[in-house]
Length: 161
Image 1 (cartoon, rainbow, N blue to C red):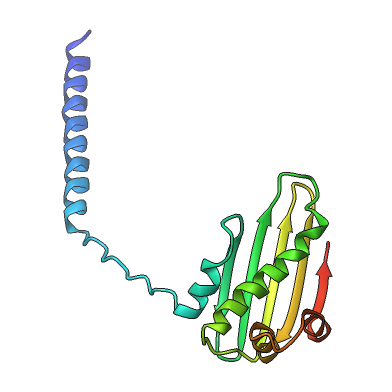
Image 2 (tube, helix red, strand yellow; image 1 turned 135 degrees about the vertical axis):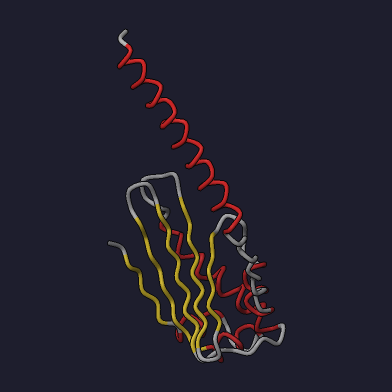
């Protein structure tokens, strides 16, 4: 190795060390300068939607929007079979039972209640939807209305792609 190559390698090594020290300094000081994020407070779920969600079985994933004029409950079911079972529409009743329990516990009845059930198999999806007035469900919850009358007043549709 010639004297010139040795000098080049020494200068290259010193430059390499300076770059590494410089990068370490940038990383070290940038971590200290960044303020830590403040934790965000999660708003607790209101009492009435919580009552509905607490009465659902753990095998469903559910979301609920409860406003003064409308309530929307969505239930999601996953099955390991290619096609979800045809009786997945029965989960509409499960949703109605949960909502009725909350209405019986003096939660205000919204004007419109919509329940969506999405049953997903490996290859196919069934969607069921019912829409009914809140006053009708409240009357049913208080046993002032029979199941058949509730069914007559509900709008049901099945959506299967």
